[in-house]
Amino acid sequence: MNELDFTKPVGPRKPSVEATAKPSIYDPAMAAEFFGSVGKPEPVAKGATIFAENEKGNRLLLRRDKMYLLLDGEVTLTAKNKVIGKIGKGEIFGEMASISEMPRSATAVAKTPCRVIALDDGQFQSALRKKPEFALMLMSVMIGRMRHAIGLQNPGGPASEGKMKESAVFDKSALAILARALSQTTVRYERNKVIVKEGQAGVMMYVVLEGRLAVSIRGKLVERIGAGGVFGEMALVERTPRLATVTSETDCGLLAFGRNTLLDLIKASPDFAVSLLGAVSDRARFI
Image (cartoon, rainbow, N blue to C red; front, side, top):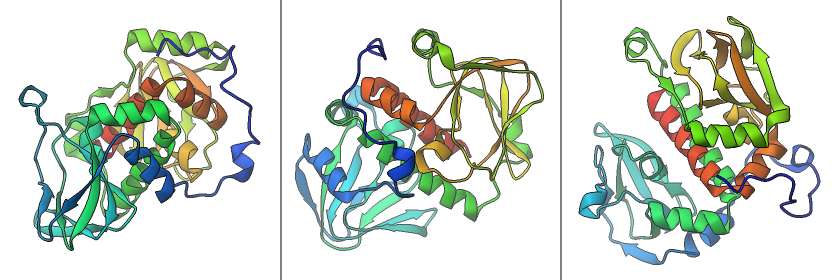
């Protein structure tokens, strides 16, 4: 992330994305270009299991989790022996486990003969350095799935609070680099202040420099965020209402910035993009 330098232009600035973008930013053609830049199509027979629930990669055994782009056919996703979704042509799947290095949350089976492109973490990062803006689109896919999952269940609860730990995305070194690059965006809040509110429009995202914050959905605590953590990125990526309320539990120092700065960060540093994708993936699993 050392390459973060906003004194050098990334390129000609385009018209404000706030004024021109549509609610959904997923583009199958862009996904095909991204996956095809480092991977090759491969066939999958009807009935074949692409990956299994609770399966986990092992780098020591050279077995890595992969994410997939479905070029042709249909894939069924099941969890606990129940169908939870279907993947169609042009859609991405399997990205959560690949990015977060956590066990698979579902089983993927080819319902029809399929063609896919599979990328491991190394291939994904290589492609991301060529096309960093793809990270924003992938975040939109992951956030959409999270919103759908939350709509089907009751998030959080007493049991989860007992296991709560502070989430952090950036280590001290990366956080210091961000703080220098975005020094003019620093804001401070006293304890017990509501910083973002569930259901409201979101125009800023935040990186925590110091302090601790609580995240709640429908009045239930689902996460705590400490130094190096992020929040507010979901509404910023999708331009949809805030999914959660975030309240300061201590005095806090934050970096607060908008969508254009987020885009500049992603283009300047694919490492930043990978870290943010990991945060979205972990949050989806935790919630």
